[in-house]
Image 1 (cartoon, rainbow, N blue to C red):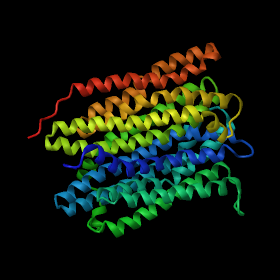
Image 2 (image 1 turned 90 degrees about the vertical axis):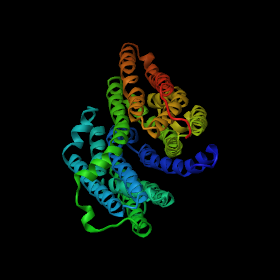
Image 3 (image 1 turned 90 degrees about the horizontal axis):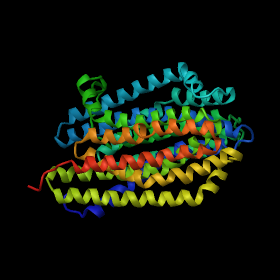
Length: 448
């Protein structure tokens, strides 16, 4: 951390983090790929999953927030030799995972139908979306508790173990999806419900493997029963770190929900096209998030040393590598938009809209990479407010006003529906200017 050249260090740390983050996107796209190719109702099922997606993002955000806070608190406690505090941090994180599970379980029973119905008046789509979301919420313990154990493994340097657990769950999901959706090998064809069951079973597999690794590898973290007793002080310390991560992720949920409402006022096909595109782009955005997670610790360590030159190198190479990732993503979607749309069984207006979305929105990737890299830098330098400002700008402030304007134009003239996709390049470009100004206004110490 102190001596290896920043460019090499960032690649060596970033590669496994990128793989881990990209795997998280698998859950978001695999279900859509299979349900879209059902013999009947494929497009309606795709739309239903798009409506459920914002709430799924929120579930992940809340789980990851608790995990991130536990990660930092556990690592800091172990570093200072305070094993009891580390045990309490781990125990309270598990307690929070259980609480999160109960909350979303209740929402699944009593709120899923109202949530889906608030975005569509189509009875078939609403029923499919409710079935899918209810199953994901009721069995959310796999997702919530895996987020905790994943971060506990990473806090002690066992990131490979957490990646193995994640891969296992993703593979399980991929294998079970066609079996449970289409009814292969004697399994009843469950359609959208089958996609949901495959997802939660995959999450449970990841949880079980991560728990086994935790018990075997993290012996230094004490697992006494008393450490699972909730402590307001420990929980406060967990969320002092984890809350910004929750807010940042939750803003994605707010943006997708809001865009579903705006696009739904124009046509159901717009919602379907946007929902599918957003899941496809997650592979690229999550890769950038992985690089951001490498930028943060390296920059923070250099900042702690007071090494101004090394901090600048972190910013430089972090942006270069993120730029390369996002440029490659832009070119990929520009050249593969048509086959991608075909792979999901889209036709007619929905297919055309999805292709337009891929080709127009992907222009924003380069600017999105700038913003994501700056968020990592801001968090590493203790400027959580600046990082949150970037999130609000790129997902709320610069998105909804132009989206409402362009939606009004599209309702008056359907030929202008494509303008709605330009909202995202505009938002990312404006946000990158804000991020650069915030960075230029910062000061950090020279090397001591």
